[in-house]
Length: 542
Image (cartoon, rainbow, N blue to C red; front, top):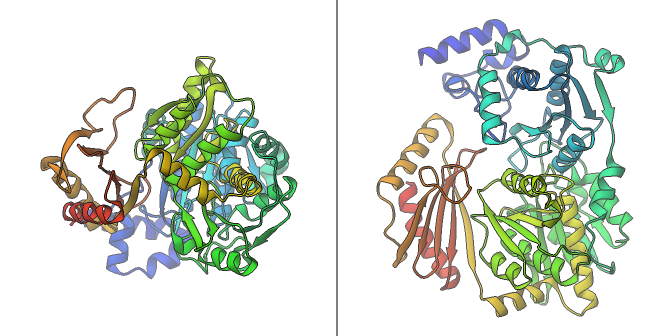
């Protein structure tokens, strides 16, 4: 607590921009804001907006930007950085402050004049030949959060080694000694340049088009985020005329007033869109998260709207691209994460595609694309996805992209409608052919200092006493990715257990949120079996 009090006293003295908030803090507030520093990793920074070392504010933003700047200068002669931001509170301010810190250090940046999706930032990093990219976003987290993602020159989130080195530079920074140029003067002087590459970005998205039909009605929600303009523009330009947008969620709003958790993985996030879909009798409902890198969907059926999970949509898109696509490579490669359904392997292999598995996190899919390119085989990559509703077709960006995913899902719905089917019909056909896999992802939350300690204890306890069975089926394979080398995968804090009957239990702490995620697969027994495995997992988590 002494260290906390020391930090708090220093901030009271030096953090003039946060003076009012600091003085209003209770003892508990002070502890939570200062008991640790925000941690920088391959996902950058993510935290609650506010004053303190464990919060996101102009001082922590300035500190990490200075560290990134020092890292770039150690590796590149005249570095250049791309910057964009989402609809969250302070996103634009944080983005401009980062640009001002870079300008103070003589580092040029290109920045969007208005909010743009995360994949757009990945694209502009590559398009302008930048040495790094900064995206101010907390993706689908609640309104109190914001974040700072760092991308490499390839448009992919920085690798583990680069993140560790950047963090080393950040640790040397005095956050109260960070200089920042006057933003407007830096723009006039050419050190900060406003850009717009929407046309170039969308032209690349359109190259991934598969379908020929457009007669489908769509209810769309951007969830008050960055998809608000670019997704409707894309749908209009691609010829989709029957598009209605949820009015309450149509414009950017960092408070997310109609949806406390703007995550299209959750049924609640699509509630208003489904209601609009029913009212307008739409064939499909589509939602993108605030930074437009994830997509959720629901399909109209005779029994109402059926939500499509992330695992299911990825399988559907693989099947659709190969069954309807043109000019596919001779030796196609599909990339999925280790927690994503094995049904994807079955479907991809039925089309002669190679499937590569990577650790959780789209940066590892991006790394796989890069490795293929280094071997002169970049055109082999066709599709990558993770069960958490992230998809990418093509390599023009190196992160999940809800804009291209929306286009493909709309095309898929239209083509199948022309064939007298729905997406749900096709999915049921895939299950009939390959067998049904049942999945559920459950998150256990551990907030604050006590929660962080509890997370460590939970993971340590599982490693000490791992499960011998999964709901009665003996564990046949147990992998601790932190200590066991698996193919070319790097070490990771992930525990995987596979039973003799094919059921799975994978456990990993989130890299961006105070959560432990549990991924459950039931090879048989349906949802009842999932419930039974979950009850078993809950015993580990408490």
